[in-house]
Amino acid sequence: GPRPAAPKVIRLGSPRPRLRLVGVGLTLVMLAFVVRLVQVQAVDASTYAGKAEQNRYVGQVLAAERGEITDRNGVALATSEDAYDITADPTMFAPEELDIADGPEQAAALLAPILGADQDDLVEKLRPENEALRYVKLAGRQTPQVWKQIKDLKAALAKKAETDESTANVLAGVFSVPTSKRVYPNNELAAGILGWVNAEGKGGGGVELQLDKRLAGEDGKIRYAQSGGRLVPTAGGSTETPAVPGSDIELTIDRDIQWAAQNAISEQVRKSAADRGYVIVQDTRTGEVLAMANAPGFDPGDLSEADPKALGNAALQDAFEPGSTAKVLSMAAVLEENVATPGTHVVVPNRLHRGDRLFKDDVDHPTWYLTLNGVLAKSSNIGTILATGQLGRTQAQANKVLYDYLRRFGLGSHSGLGFPGETKGILAPPDEWSTSQQYTIPFGQGVSINAMQAASVYSTIANGGVRVEPTLVRGSKGPDGRFTPAPKPGKTRVVSEKTAKTLARMLESVVDDEEGTGTKARIPGYRVAGKTGTANRVDPATGKYHGYTSSFAGFAPADKPRITVYCVIQNATEGSYFGGQICGPVYKQVMEFALKTLQVPPTGAAPAALPVTFTP
Image (cartoon, rainbow, N blue to C red; front, side, top):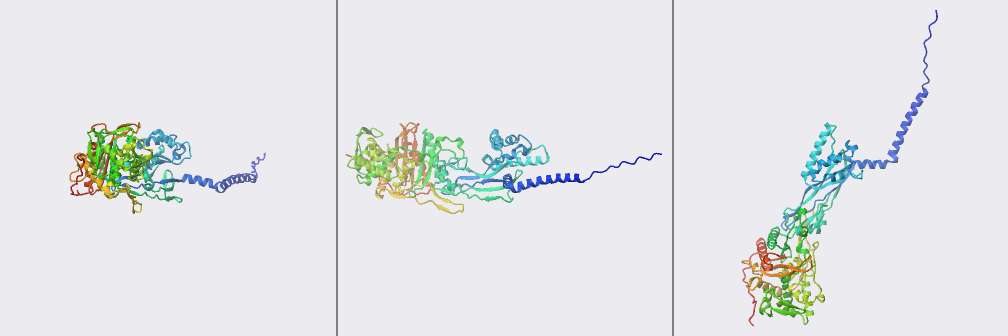
């Protein structure tokens, strides 16, 4: 039979070409890897390292703790509390990071009610135009409670995201930076002196601005690694420069006296329906300001409620014509130049023709027969013009002599406090005095001062004729706890001790004598020296005379002075506008309180009354 067909033999092709092909393929792949590796590790190394760094490291400022401001007894007037800036890393809200498109919207919806912020504003910050931006500030100076709420919410979301894949932790990119918030524990108390701190944490007025550098300290820096929304402070490459805290500032103010002054002036401004008022209390021997109160005031911790006109410190920033309280300057010149004594006879007619004007006193009267002491006690403008006319052989000479005394007492120059926005007032040189100014400046019109300058005049007389520059700062305490006293204030002799003592006795007649204008300022048991003032007031808005500047200035005990008090009320529109009537009681209330607080005993000596009138 036929032979069976031989089975087909399948010949395998030579394996070499295939192997060669695979080898070439693998070599090419490897080559691509090597080229890429060389590129990454050698050619673009710095770029990639930088990118990695940028992704890993975040820098933040460590806010320095702002120094405290205290009163002379260490009672806090301005202090700082822990707070947090709420920040975010916008790159962590991108769709590729969260696997959702509306990360910023979801985060903003959660954060807006906690931060009290506008939702759309937050979305804008979390989705910035610059997509590489790693840091934005969502809200500044939030309380620890606010950050705790956010932190708890963030932790709850993170936990849910671990077990539930559909949940995105939309708050993973929200962080906090420790900072501090300025707090004024006494609300409005001494606001005019303290000033305030702005949203950037810098002093915006008052001592906060004046001494901002010392109070602020120096911010530090921190740089740390970040991974998946968590900070890794231990990672290599983290650095920290610690912040240096600011110095504490101790003021010369006594909180209790400040409180009494603020109470008294606020009450009287309200009762008189006045534009505003101020009171200054000064230690006559050291020049230290124990109180400086303004009404109306403001709360430096909540400027949103403040009246912009009440911000600042009107006691230093308002320039006004002092009126009769300035007559003491004229009397100082007359006594020091030996042209008259307290007993010198001055015949005061009802009208006096000088230059192009007829001058009068604040009341119509028959011819008065006054002593020089009586001219001050009854506050006669005409008597003052007649007395200062004796200062020179000609009116021009007399003007020059008076001007020199006004300058020595500190008019026309800054008080020495170095306070932001303080006015020098307006005192023209004597060759520029108009015909009427030659006769009105002696009784305090046609010259402008601030309240501190006026208080300083009375302190100078109280201090035996030596002017001590006023001070508001006692010293500072650095981060090391060492107290550095403020530099000693400058002192200048203005008039002799004899003149000062005589003036003090004349000022007692104003308060003590029934003929005097300051009887409302009497304090039982104490000898009080003082002077009333009621001046026509220049309206700052129109530049024309409108209303009155009512004032009272003085010191006590008159025979052994310790304290000066000066009170001013601007434009009283209800009740009396006479300085003796509305500022006398404020002076009395504040002075009584200050004497008690500083435990100043009455001297016990009876005043030797100087005659006010003479019989022709």
